[in-house]
Image (cartoon, rainbow, N blue to C red; front, side):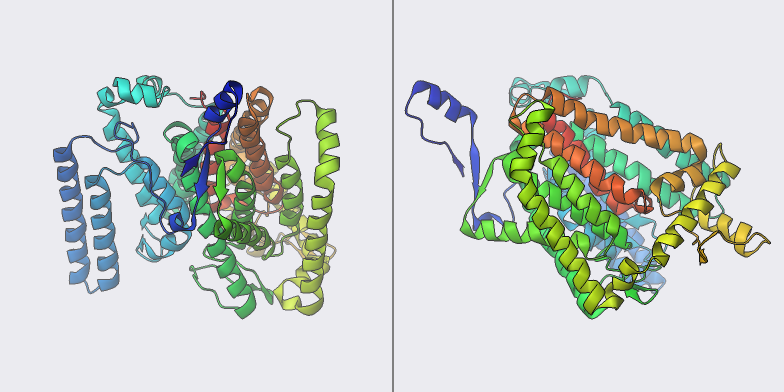
Length: 541
């Protein structure tokens, strides 16, 4: 419920009218009531007949496809495809908004991505592809009815809606990322050894995150409904911590994707519900930063039970980021937290450093102490859980050797690289199946992975792709930096600081890991980046 603080004078009453806090009680945790916006441009189709027709066509096609699978004896995939088609038909028939679909996706994709895919291996239909295809269809059909967005009631409730529907505008980051995505897709089609696999990676890793960013920045009302995203992030953080802790304790991979390994080189590499341990660690780190900022950002107050659950979620996300035992993630946790503490009340740099030293130093010391204690405990009591990798310098030597090998590939193929998703094949062909020996650093051989986002893009897409990748990320960083400078209030400044923090959290591990190769991380990263950019500057198109 919304509560207004008591004001005894006319001035304090006017201030109270501007400040509205939302009290979240335990009863809203099971399923938060989504705000229904009768005339919102995010609501799909105001014409019931067209909704029903589209849903019937989709349901019929899904059932027919399931019937063909049943005829082949593939009953599991038939049931999943029919259920997915019926669920999409229900979403189309009901007056459900894009906001509801995306918030549901945000909280459920780690689990449902494992179950909703067809076929199970080399999937053509996946949960993420279905969700964002549905979102695109909803927005395209809605754009065909501009009258709904220009009615007086709609314009009064959302002042920016009419201008948004009148013209399609994109940010500089989106232009650079779209060019990078087009280059990756063209490289996959023209030069990849396994075109089908490379196309899937190009769509999931580049195109879907671009759609997530654009929709989050242009079509969602974060001022009014951001608290629903917070309520989705809390159970998500608890779920990720629970799966990661279970895998670390038991050594059992709960949601095992083909090709993912929980135990590598005798060590447990916790990956939770994702295919890669790097995705698990960095997503937990991004959630940790978002959860720290969200209550102040959306003016949410919890009751006593809610405070306990919220504290557990924040702690779970922070600890979950450390479970895979990446040194770069631990460093990113400390540095991104410092960036997040960018003050909301100070404008100049000297004041910020004084405030950081006074308020942030004790917590920073506590965080560093916890990290050192956690790493020391793993190294001393459970080497198989990752202690060997932390204390053995050979892992660092192997990383240096991998970087050296990747850099040589970049210089050998400087324009367009070796083609998207061709790095491992190219490295094997030029080293293991040729006379050239693998790169070594202090008798430690390089692997067939570049172990760096920068070197991965440079090796597979050449300096052309690398320049686009760097330009896109620089534009994203400048979005947050400029938003901090021109913020009009503390909430906008906090949103901009959180955007900068998650950019730092994404980039620091990405310098030593090819973490951007996996779509889950890019989807969460760019979705939250678009949301925070919109919140920090509501007039940004």
